[in-house]
Length: 213
Image (cartoon, rainbow, N blue to C red; front, side, top):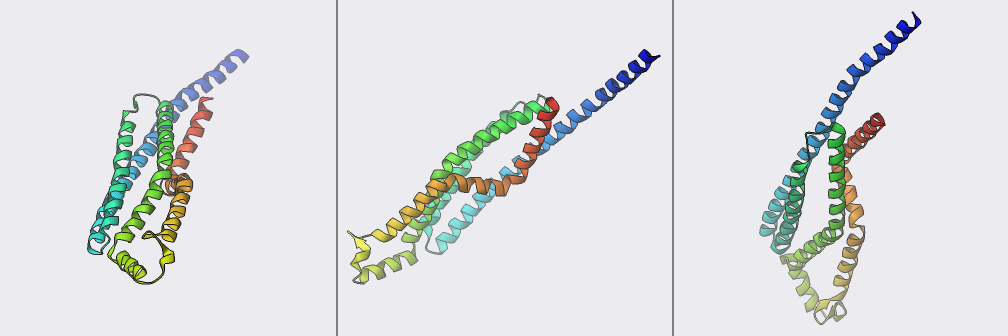
């Protein structure tokens, strides 16, 4: 009798486990797909936002004497879009015919590579964005008026061989700070946009690892 009861007890747990495991796998499959799909939607939205913003800013700059800066910023933003779209294409190469654990692990690894790459680029494109804006301001109608006023006054301390030294020095220092802290600024921007997705991904990875172990 004891053996039969023990057998029934163990058999009951085996049957229950067999019912639970497929449900858990299905749950994690759906969660994995949901996280990746949400990331894709956010990425596409943000790239289109950059494109539309750069076009509108270019149009605005054309009618407000800031065309040089508008062109530089347009080129910079769309270069970033092009680079990240090429990186995004590699996401579609991830194998979907695998378990939820393998798929979400592959996505997590892919995401870390893209973040690391963009973090490195941020040390260049944040100072470039600042320099583009300041150069655009320098060559704008308003900027030229300020330059003419400075050149028309006997304030030669501002100029060395026609170059406004203090202005250039200040711009260089700020651009240098953007270069140093570009990675940190990028991480802040990234978490403002994708923070909720990263948190869900981290929770899912933790749950799957615990289940696997």
